[in-house]
Image 1: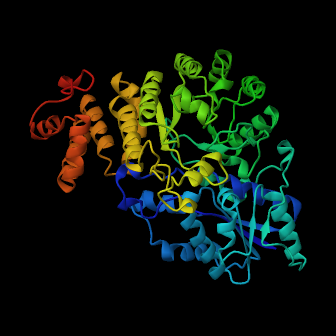
Image 2: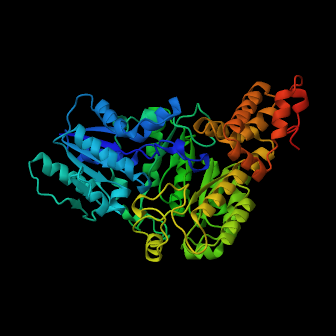
Image 3: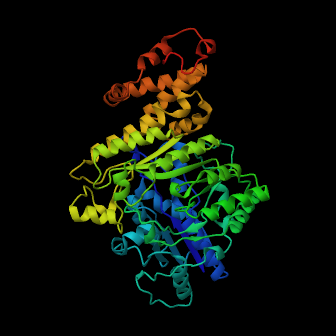
Length: 548
């Protein structure tokens, strides 16, 4: 039996038509959903051939190379046809994560049915699990798997192989793999792991080989905005520290990976597991770098931070969400804000990248509380801040609140990305929340960036250059790059940035003049630099020369 597993792309194919502050394209990571599903099927149904297609990685690579997106009306069909290479498939499994990219999922479903007539087309993942009725109405799908997919999908494939066709359209069995530690060794070669070791990430040099890893399922928290329980549950099913370290050692040996990012929903929730993992890394002398992409800061203490740093942890992204104690209580996050500040200080003391995640625009939140979040975030002195707009996801308490009060300003089944507002409340409009997020990002990550102000340019330069490549009309990052290159005496690079800035100003004067006034940008210095005929690195020796 031949099975094709496809990850739908999480990109906005019309992103370039939007303001730059509303654009976002996620760096491709190992597609954990289809990788785990394919691994399980191959283990339980020997002889089954699995082919993986990551349409997100394909779209990202195209954008990186050509700074454009293809026509989605034709690209999905063409890409699946190319991936099949003339091969026929019995089942096509489609995985979709966020409903923000629902259109891409349904385009994928249509392309799969029309490209592989006669194949069973099955949907799974967070979007189908959260918006089951909407997905089940898609005529291009045969079945929708709700929740954790390995067990019901494998039974469906086994029935199909034996000629049994009586399965219900929606498979919502609630079956889960209770012991995640016993999951088979993943199909690393089959999924094409090598392609994912080169995708860029914050604070990691281009030459480093890096990979995302999943070591647990489920989260015991009950945050009002989170929909992860629609697939997993509120339990915590971790792999053991021994299994974790063995996997990292294998990946380092086989693929040369030295930097690992853990994409668990709550990697640090079990303090004892974290400490045991760190001690094993030290005992084995594995000499790797690692990073938990989200963390519950209440689970940290100074001992844990010190141990993590010694074992190779380069930084932690702490999910704080709000700097308001009232909002913390309302969203049931309950982060201890003073403790979070102390842990950020501890990270910096141990040379780690201190990063934090915040969201704006929860129903019931006021503009004053959002300002409180910005003020609090600034006090943390983080190396980088991740910001987004609170977006209601079906199945969450936040969604029910917005539905009951008529807060939605867009179709709730196709909400926007986390960079665009989708609700209006008595306290704010979508435009006001978007404005708040833009100011948060531009001020804290760029104009007031800790590494930039201290003159530690090499710490932030790779990330700025990566952003500039992804968003060539991002005026603020080009402006920051000009300032850094100018201070470093790199006149050719500074001149290139200055020319880009003046071109952007000429091509979009209203937007750029608004940014200049709003953030008090010194464009006169850029003009003066371009007009200057002499000078060199000697006069640029102090940080950010001519910008004091």
